[in-house]
Image (tube, rainbow, N blue to C red; front, side, top):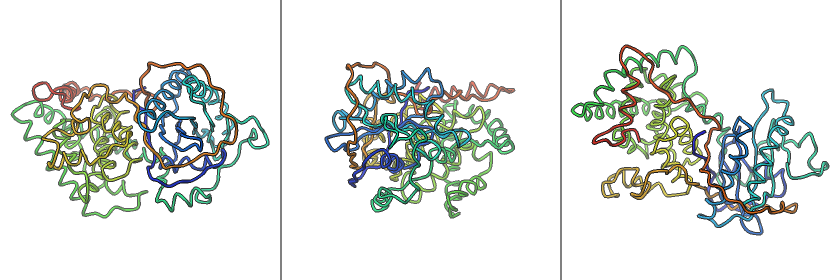
Length: 464
């Protein structure tokens, strides 16, 4: 596991009152901006009316042995992060979202996750914050881990409301809150190609381009020219994408993929491993340039196939930055979480993830990149205010949400003895990806590419 949790949700002043587990379950995708598949979501409640505050999301860990430590990390992250923003929570609501493999065994999934739900309830109670409700959402049904009454919470669960048919759906539509589909669908738009023929052709191009390009990046005399070539090619590709109107979302990515050949993609992917080049590319962040850049970064992220998976951290971070800059916070958090999954120590992704989660205004960074503020500091300094970068990804960033309210329908759980946790924040994926390195060949391109990412001018970390 890496060290980064995801905290997300829309942020507006719309007020809606929710009553009971059914309306809580229906509200979840509107709180997140997407359907959080294979996820645990925790939401802080404040005040006597149960106003929704910060929330965080984490991919459900596959190994049950991780559930106890992860539960303690999540409880500590949500509570401490909420204290910095909105004050200490009065209660917490938990959602465990996971469909069964066959789509028909939701109850078995619910029972399998019950120990995880209990660990989360215990961890929150140990910090003197009770869990008001814990729900499992699986295969179109929901179950409550807190309600023992079979009349309202039967063993077979209750069906989820049909999309768009509830008061919450109507209120969300009125407030302009959109649901972007499932988390799995959003991640699929950024994931590396899996089709053997396509992946093989792109892998061969990366192997073909890497030896000469990496050597030039490591040469101080040629480094600036490589950066210029990378940015010129990237801008050319953006123009090509911009002249082609995007198709509906279901097929737009396929059209973009067909506009960029393997060698072009390889050259820009490898060139972006240099930090200074990546920072200059981040200036394409708004207006028509931002829209075209986002399409390009998504396309390049999908081209980081096989052992080059770690290289996706750069285009994924740029995709997350452009999404955040243009107001798409759910899309930004998904892209930045995937960047951290590709490389948990990618500093720019850490800083953007934290800043986005903590509700900072991206205009500070935009001013820096436009050149009308920031005193010449780089984008990382703009995000941190020039402060310390180390450990930037371990802080708990808790996003604010709409002013929803939950009516308490049963007594809160008994408070347990307060217990602190010294663990860092947890990750977004639940499993640790294998770091990507270049394939062995006649030249040590893998080792050289790591040198590019590790060292910049005067020893500065190039990739970070």
